[in-house]
Image (cartoon, rainbow, N blue to C red; front, side, top):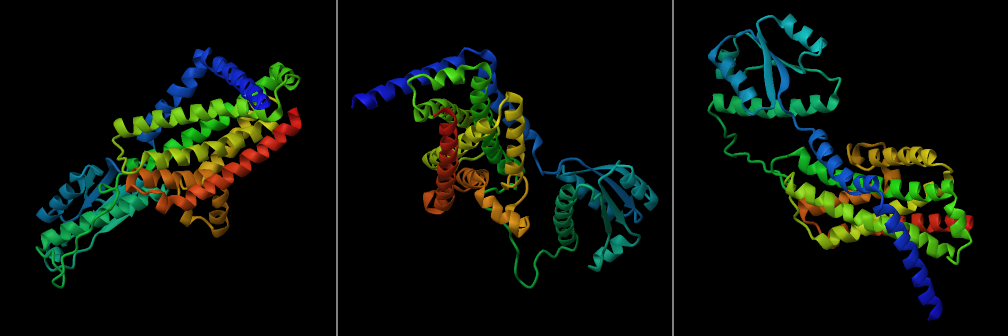
Length: 372
């Protein structure tokens, strides 16, 4: 009992020292608590696949009431902005080549008559250098033109069946509702990696790690003292960025906070393990910083944060199962938007538990060999 009590006292003393070291530096406080909220605001507005005011050139060779109405229909939603209307097809090509427009629409002569017969056609040209914008614009235009054609021909019923589509979980199909929860996971990962790796390496650089080696602290107690503070900070940052996501961006939170907290604890455990591994192979803070981003960027790219995992080659899709970011982002999006619980998300929780245990255990063994 006395040994366990002494161990608790030693860990408590180390934790007190770590928290004092963190909170006495105002710059560190801004990095830990203010920076994630600011980054969420920046990413929340910048990371978006929604279209708005997409530059469009309209070549109207028909100059009819129907073609003018079509132009108004295209710009009505705010997704497209007609920057130029012309009757020369060459102007459209030059605008696309010069980057003055992303979309070009050519309405042929006789469009109004063909529309009345249900045989109208037109040409759409897209700047495919940004394939994502081009594909989204193509989808938006297809829906608009279909509705315009049905309205113009007064025939919105086909074969006696009226088609009505609904999007579940994200009715407005807002990319912000989809992206912001994933940004939460990305920010927590970066906080855990940077704080853990840089803190331990800093101790090594200034020589205090050598002093801790000769103290009564065991290797396990030293590891606990170095990881618990940053685990607590990670949970606090989760609350901060989640609050900003819900109150500022209006992201719906349909799920159970306990499910999210449990997943976050497992995810932070994995992040701390990676950070501790980075600290064990780095000798300077600059080296730890570079290694952190060498790991963080591929982890985010292979997580489904920006690109669907299902669209990756099979070998990379399988490799993402070893990426804790993938499982956490799946959980965050499902909890926020779908209200999913453990009955649905238990596989992702199980993956996080296994990865977190392995990563933190491996880091602890390597760190124990260094300081033990």
